[in-house]
Length: 345
Image (tube, rainbow, N blue to C red; front, side, top):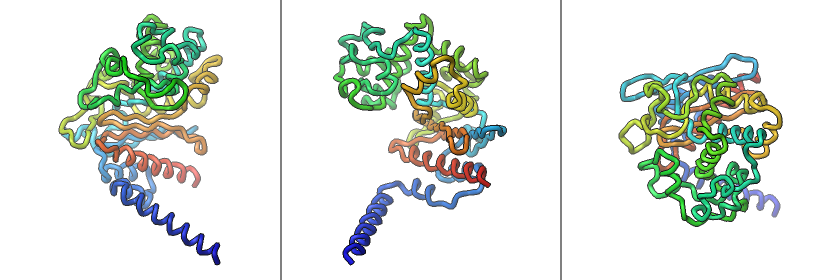
């Protein structure tokens, strides 16, 4: 009898907790989660737009199958241009995967060492960045350096900086967030510094190395360092709730098509991107999937081993409270369910 009562109490507590969770989760996300699952990816893309995204692009790469492309909503809503699945998009932090691959390749070549420190490579930052003599390359790749994140500085996204120098100035002479290696904390400053270290080790801009060793190797013709390298009309517009303007012209990071990102991710997983000990080095320092966020642009790129499929999703709407970040996760999970279900039929 007591056991039954205990079970009943636990059930009530769990249901109450679920109810409270629903109360605090925005309705837009709950609605997207509880809707019946459509039969096709295109229907889900259309539903994502109905749920609030201005536009969505989806790329599906299943082993031994032709690639699939889906789009819904607007490429440019002000000019009424429909979404184009082959449009360029700001991939934000997905670019960290390319940086980590470049680091692995340079370590394999002996041009960099994972154990050497920030002070070893950029001695001018000793005394300007706390613990520079203790922070290793590996710690920076893995976000375990304790260096403050420049994008977390007050009102950063209201007027983003465009140069590494300007961004670095925001955190110089600030105390560390924690002792190197003691914690994990996602930090864009780490990758800014890694790019500076690669430039110095190579003697030329590191993106040229990424171009030669990654993009050219995979025949990726639609991946670029920035919007400055492309026709701006080919870039999908980006929108941030409460902000009246298209954010397409903000120069923030790499741009690529969903297909190029998908091809890169497939090569990252199957090892065709690597030579020698590069894959082992990469596996020891970083992950094999990523998300990205900058104002107006959200991206998800993952490989799903159980169905041997790469699925990339781009959505061009963000908001201050990150509701659309959670909504993008819901839409993505539903797309993967549809792809998985179709493959199992």
